[in-house]
Image (cartoon, rainbow, N blue to C red; front, side, top):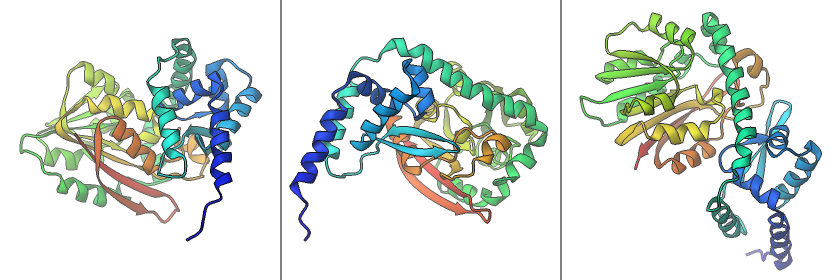
Length: 319
């Protein structure tokens, strides 16, 4: 059995101590628990220069407290997902201590501006391209490419005959029909009037209620369902982790969350052509968001497409 050089762990522990010995870096780690951000976004939120922010992120990365992923020409940072690697118990203790501390409310304004800009760009895209929705989605994957796998998972879920469902961002309504056949009532929720009208035209079914708004609006209306579906939607949402936490409140006891989305990829053209905010989503990151929202992972399926994209279908249950 190979013997690990003791100095390696000591050096890594020194890097950890250095990385956490600065209040700004601790605040960055606290923020990254909520979401992933680009360097420029973080610099704007904390009101520091981009070069200074890059310096701090480099130190956090060297201590394996943050990891990166490329989003086109930008690098996005997130907190490291702990998997039992050396010193992960120390990193976990650091994260727990940071998360227990009070949030710096003076960052709220900058954070709100970043989220508002992300949301604005996404909504503008769908308002502009609602009439071309089929052509846009077919650039990556139309419902016919993965619908069979999605519907097979739907059949495995044991629910009462009176169960209700909701789909967030139903698009052209490809999944609404299977949902309407399985559930007594289905809510179709979308924040774009044009996209909601498109879904109405394609699925004029009596047990579907079309609701204009965000998931938080549905929570305010005290709507609860037995199944909540996000079908190729999360990569368009500015704050996917926050949305999953909100949506957990929409689930009845033992309710299910069904997510279909793209796996990570490097096709930057989809941001302009398809309105994507994220270049796919890491399955492990989705599972972490779900766990944080009080949901347990039940099942997953991966569907490879001829154009090189890969789709993931994730099923969670409220615990």
